[in-house]
Image 1 (cartoon, rainbow, N blue to C red):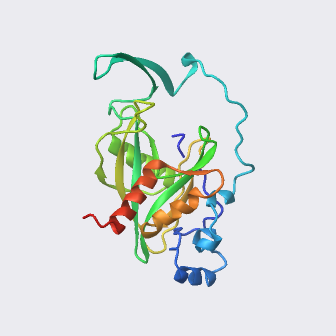
Image 2 (cartoon, helix red, strand yellow):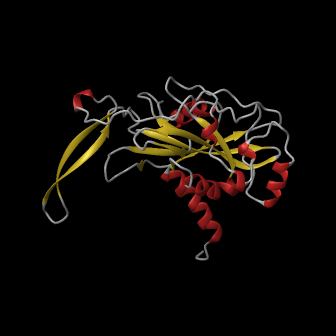
Length: 259
Protein backbone atom coordinates (compact mmCIF):
# COMPACT_ATOMS: atom_id res chain seq x y z
CA UNK A 1 0.00 0.00 0.00
CA UNK A 2 1.06 3.60 -0.55
CA UNK A 3 1.28 4.06 3.19
CA UNK A 4 4.78 2.94 3.65
CA UNK A 5 9.40 4.34 3.74
CA UNK A 6 12.53 2.60 2.60
CA UNK A 7 15.13 1.11 4.91
CA UNK A 8 17.48 3.68 6.43
CA UNK A 9 21.26 3.57 6.39
CA UNK A 10 21.13 4.41 10.06
CA UNK A 11 20.01 0.84 10.74
CA UNK A 12 22.64 -1.78 11.42
CA UNK A 13 22.03 -5.47 10.73
CA UNK A 14 20.50 -6.16 14.14
CA UNK A 15 17.30 -5.14 15.88
CA UNK A 16 17.22 -1.37 16.28
CA UNK A 17 16.02 -0.25 19.68
CA UNK A 18 15.99 3.38 20.79
CA UNK A 19 17.56 3.53 24.23
CA UNK A 20 15.55 4.97 27.14
CA UNK A 21 15.95 8.68 27.81
CA UNK A 22 17.91 8.38 31.03
CA UNK A 23 21.36 9.31 32.27
CA UNK A 24 22.21 5.62 32.35
CA UNK A 25 21.39 5.23 28.68
CA UNK A 26 23.44 8.34 27.92
CA UNK A 27 26.43 6.68 29.54
CA UNK A 28 25.74 3.43 27.73
CA UNK A 29 25.51 5.11 24.35
CA UNK A 30 28.84 6.82 24.95
CA UNK A 31 30.51 3.45 25.30
CA UNK A 32 28.66 1.83 22.38
CA UNK A 33 30.56 0.34 19.48
CA UNK A 34 31.41 2.23 16.32
CA UNK A 35 28.47 0.63 14.57
CA UNK A 36 26.01 2.45 16.85
CA UNK A 37 24.00 5.33 15.39
CA UNK A 38 21.67 8.15 16.35
CA UNK A 39 18.84 5.75 17.04
CA UNK A 40 20.81 4.72 20.12
CA UNK A 41 21.62 8.28 21.16
CA UNK A 42 20.59 10.07 24.31
CA UNK A 43 17.99 12.83 24.27
CA UNK A 44 20.57 15.57 23.83
CA UNK A 45 21.73 14.05 20.55
CA UNK A 46 18.35 12.84 19.28
CA UNK A 47 17.70 13.43 15.60
CA UNK A 48 14.84 12.20 13.41
CA UNK A 49 16.17 9.05 11.68
CA UNK A 50 14.52 9.89 8.35
CA UNK A 51 17.34 12.35 7.73
CA UNK A 52 19.74 9.46 7.19
CA UNK A 53 17.98 7.35 4.55
CA UNK A 54 20.61 5.66 2.36
CA UNK A 55 18.57 5.95 -0.86
CA UNK A 56 17.39 9.50 -0.30
CA UNK A 57 18.69 12.00 -2.83
CA UNK A 58 16.62 15.02 -1.82
CA UNK A 59 13.81 16.26 0.36
CA UNK A 60 10.36 15.69 -1.17
CA UNK A 61 8.92 18.80 -2.81
CA UNK A 62 5.33 19.72 -3.67
CA UNK A 63 5.47 20.83 -7.30
CA UNK A 64 1.82 21.78 -7.80
CA UNK A 65 -1.55 21.67 -6.07
CA UNK A 66 -4.64 21.79 -8.29
CA UNK A 67 -8.33 20.87 -8.29
CA UNK A 68 -9.04 17.25 -9.20
CA UNK A 69 -12.16 16.42 -11.22
CA UNK A 70 -14.18 13.73 -9.47
CA UNK A 71 -14.14 11.45 -12.51
CA UNK A 72 -10.33 11.43 -12.43
CA UNK A 73 -10.01 10.50 -8.75
CA UNK A 74 -8.79 6.93 -8.22
CA UNK A 75 -8.85 6.57 -4.43
CA UNK A 76 -11.37 9.04 -3.02
CA UNK A 77 -14.41 10.97 -4.13
CA UNK A 78 -16.54 13.81 -2.78
CA UNK A 79 -20.25 13.50 -2.04
CA UNK A 80 -23.02 15.79 -0.84
CA UNK A 81 -25.24 14.50 1.96
CA UNK A 82 -28.71 16.02 2.35
CA UNK A 83 -30.17 15.30 5.77
CA UNK A 84 -32.67 16.44 8.36
CA UNK A 85 -31.16 17.34 11.73
CA UNK A 86 -32.46 16.67 15.26
CA UNK A 87 -34.86 19.64 15.20
CA UNK A 88 -36.29 18.99 11.72
CA UNK A 89 -34.13 21.43 9.76
CA UNK A 90 -32.88 20.49 6.28
CA UNK A 91 -29.09 20.59 6.01
CA UNK A 92 -26.24 19.49 3.75
CA UNK A 93 -22.75 18.10 4.40
CA UNK A 94 -19.75 17.57 2.15
CA UNK A 95 -18.22 14.12 2.65
CA UNK A 96 -14.97 12.62 1.35
CA UNK A 97 -15.35 8.88 0.79
CA UNK A 98 -12.94 6.13 -0.27
CA UNK A 99 -13.53 4.15 -3.46
CA UNK A 100 -11.65 1.10 -2.20
CA UNK A 101 -13.85 -0.33 0.57
CA UNK A 102 -14.15 -4.10 0.16
CA UNK A 103 -16.28 -6.93 1.54
CA UNK A 104 -15.08 -6.35 5.10
CA UNK A 105 -16.91 -3.03 5.13
CA UNK A 106 -13.83 -1.43 6.68
CA UNK A 107 -11.38 0.81 4.85
CA UNK A 108 -8.14 0.36 6.75
CA UNK A 109 -6.34 -1.24 9.65
CA UNK A 110 -3.57 0.09 11.88
CA UNK A 111 -1.25 -2.18 13.83
CA UNK A 112 -0.42 -1.24 17.37
CA UNK A 113 2.46 -3.55 18.13
CA UNK A 114 4.60 -4.94 20.92
CA UNK A 115 8.11 -6.26 20.22
CA UNK A 116 9.43 -8.72 22.79
CA UNK A 117 13.19 -9.34 22.94
CA UNK A 118 15.16 -11.47 25.44
CA UNK A 119 17.49 -8.67 26.51
CA UNK A 120 15.62 -5.47 25.60
CA UNK A 121 12.62 -3.76 27.17
CA UNK A 122 9.18 -4.30 25.68
CA UNK A 123 9.05 -1.95 22.70
CA UNK A 124 6.95 -0.81 19.79
CA UNK A 125 7.89 -0.33 16.14
CA UNK A 126 7.06 3.00 14.52
CA UNK A 127 7.16 3.93 10.85
CA UNK A 128 8.20 7.27 9.44
CA UNK A 129 7.06 8.36 6.00
CA UNK A 130 6.45 11.47 3.94
CA UNK A 131 2.77 12.35 3.55
CA UNK A 132 2.03 14.70 0.61
CA UNK A 133 -1.31 16.00 2.01
CA UNK A 134 0.64 17.40 4.98
CA UNK A 135 3.92 18.04 3.15
CA UNK A 136 5.52 16.56 6.24
CA UNK A 137 6.98 13.38 7.65
CA UNK A 138 4.58 11.52 9.92
CA UNK A 139 5.37 9.25 12.85
CA UNK A 140 2.86 6.41 12.84
CA UNK A 141 2.17 2.80 13.62
CA UNK A 142 2.17 0.57 10.52
CA UNK A 143 -1.18 0.74 8.70
CA UNK A 144 -2.77 0.13 5.33
CA UNK A 145 -5.91 -0.37 3.30
CA UNK A 146 -7.83 -3.63 3.49
CA UNK A 147 -7.96 -5.46 0.15
CA UNK A 148 -11.33 -6.28 -1.40
CA UNK A 149 -11.44 -9.93 -0.28
CA UNK A 150 -9.59 -9.57 3.04
CA UNK A 151 -10.69 -9.40 6.62
CA UNK A 152 -9.20 -6.67 8.79
CA UNK A 153 -7.17 -9.28 10.69
CA UNK A 154 -5.71 -10.74 7.48
CA UNK A 155 -4.83 -7.25 6.27
CA UNK A 156 -3.10 -6.49 9.58
CA UNK A 157 -0.76 -9.48 9.25
CA UNK A 158 -0.05 -8.77 5.58
CA UNK A 159 0.52 -5.03 5.96
CA UNK A 160 2.74 -5.48 9.02
CA UNK A 161 4.90 -7.94 7.08
CA UNK A 162 5.13 -5.62 4.07
CA UNK A 163 5.97 -2.45 5.98
CA UNK A 164 8.22 -3.88 8.69
CA UNK A 165 9.42 -7.28 7.43
CA UNK A 166 8.29 -8.95 10.65
CA UNK A 167 5.77 -11.74 11.13
CA UNK A 168 3.28 -10.93 13.86
CA UNK A 169 0.58 -12.55 15.95
CA UNK A 170 -2.73 -10.73 16.30
CA UNK A 171 -3.69 -10.28 19.95
CA UNK A 172 -6.93 -8.37 19.53
CA UNK A 173 -9.04 -6.41 17.06
CA UNK A 174 -10.87 -3.21 17.95
CA UNK A 175 -14.44 -2.43 16.95
CA UNK A 176 -14.84 -0.39 13.76
CA UNK A 177 -13.76 3.19 14.43
CA UNK A 178 -14.34 6.51 12.68
CA UNK A 179 -11.18 7.89 11.12
CA UNK A 180 -12.16 11.56 10.58
CA UNK A 181 -15.94 11.86 11.11
CA UNK A 182 -16.19 15.59 10.46
CA UNK A 183 -14.85 15.25 6.92
CA UNK A 184 -15.10 11.64 5.81
CA UNK A 185 -17.00 8.37 6.18
CA UNK A 186 -13.64 6.56 6.27
CA UNK A 187 -13.43 3.93 8.98
CA UNK A 188 -10.79 1.58 10.35
CA UNK A 189 -9.92 -1.01 12.95
CA UNK A 190 -6.96 -1.24 15.30
CA UNK A 191 -5.13 -4.55 15.52
CA UNK A 192 -2.85 -5.10 18.49
CA UNK A 193 -0.09 -7.46 17.41
CA UNK A 194 2.93 -9.10 19.04
CA UNK A 195 6.36 -9.91 17.59
CA UNK A 196 8.65 -12.41 19.34
CA UNK A 197 12.35 -11.73 18.70
CA UNK A 198 15.42 -13.81 19.47
CA UNK A 199 19.01 -12.91 20.27
CA UNK A 200 20.99 -12.59 17.07
CA UNK A 201 17.99 -12.16 14.77
CA UNK A 202 18.78 -9.98 11.77
CA UNK A 203 16.47 -7.17 10.76
CA UNK A 204 14.14 -8.52 8.05
CA UNK A 205 13.74 -6.95 4.64
CA UNK A 206 10.63 -4.90 3.99
CA UNK A 207 8.35 -5.69 1.07
CA UNK A 208 7.65 -2.19 -0.16
CA UNK A 209 5.93 -1.19 -3.37
CA UNK A 210 7.25 1.35 -5.84
CA UNK A 211 7.01 4.82 -4.34
CA UNK A 212 6.95 3.59 -0.75
CA UNK A 213 9.71 4.89 1.50
CA UNK A 214 9.17 3.67 5.04
CA UNK A 215 11.72 3.90 7.81
CA UNK A 216 11.42 1.79 10.94
CA UNK A 217 12.23 2.88 14.47
CA UNK A 218 11.88 0.71 17.58
CA UNK A 219 11.09 2.58 20.80
CA UNK A 220 10.75 1.17 24.36
CA UNK A 221 7.13 1.45 25.46
CA UNK A 222 8.25 3.19 28.64
CA UNK A 223 9.74 5.99 26.55
CA UNK A 224 7.09 6.21 23.82
CA UNK A 225 5.40 9.39 25.03
CA UNK A 226 8.68 11.25 25.48
CA UNK A 227 9.94 10.18 22.06
CA UNK A 228 6.77 11.32 20.34
CA UNK A 229 7.02 14.70 22.03
CA UNK A 230 10.62 14.92 20.76
CA UNK A 231 9.54 14.03 17.24
CA UNK A 232 6.79 16.64 17.28
CA UNK A 233 9.41 19.33 17.86
CA UNK A 234 11.37 18.36 14.74
CA UNK A 235 11.02 20.43 11.60
CA UNK A 236 8.47 19.21 9.05
CA UNK A 237 7.35 16.38 11.33
CA UNK A 238 3.90 15.45 12.65
CA UNK A 239 2.94 12.61 14.98
CA UNK A 240 -0.19 10.72 13.91
CA UNK A 241 -3.12 11.38 16.23
CA UNK A 242 -3.98 7.71 16.87
CA UNK A 243 -0.44 6.94 17.97
CA UNK A 244 -0.11 9.99 20.18
CA UNK A 245 -3.50 9.32 21.78
CA UNK A 246 -2.34 5.81 22.68
CA UNK A 247 0.90 7.12 24.21
CA UNK A 248 -0.92 9.90 26.04
CA UNK A 249 -3.40 7.35 27.40
CA UNK A 250 -0.54 5.23 28.69
CA UNK A 251 1.03 8.27 30.34
CA UNK A 252 -2.28 9.32 31.87
CA UNK A 253 -2.93 5.84 33.26
CA UNK A 254 0.50 5.90 34.90
CA UNK A 255 0.19 9.39 36.38
CA UNK A 256 -3.53 9.98 37.05
CA UNK A 257 -5.04 10.01 40.54
CA UNK A 258 -8.68 9.37 39.68
CA UNK A 259 -8.82 5.58 39.83
